[in-house]
Amino acid sequence: MPHKILIIEDNANNSTLLLDILNFHGYEVSVAADGLEGVALARNLMPDLILMDIQMPGMDGMTAGGILNGDPATSGLKIIALTSFAMQGDQEKFLAAGFDGYLAKPINTRELPDQIKQWLSMELPP
Ligand SMILES: [Mg+2]
Image (cartoon, rainbow, N blue to C red):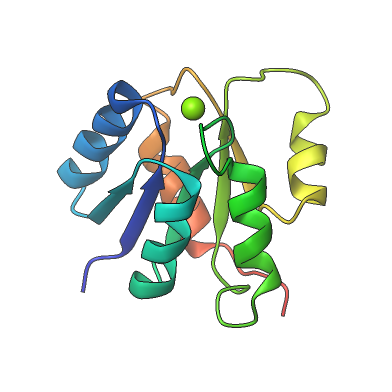
């Protein structure tokens, strides 16, 4: 069974780029365009990994991540923050908010496959 990855990203260029790379590497990929749709899909699919954009219209990534983390049914899902705020200290901010990792945009397409593998094999604290 291929790993399931959910992309939650409002920018179609970014989600298409991620989708193409992850499909190429054999993952089963789903895409949501905002936080509300993303939370619903996450509950349905229970993906092995979620790539969550932070800046989205409607429900943003911080809110959607907080909802998933706060619900015992989905709190065990691995969620990686996708953000263009390439600022020092951001990683700590997102980890403190309950995200399990951080990916800065623009996406480094050469590094992404190894990062995805690392996140998929990462053990989460209980
Ligand atoms: Mg966005």
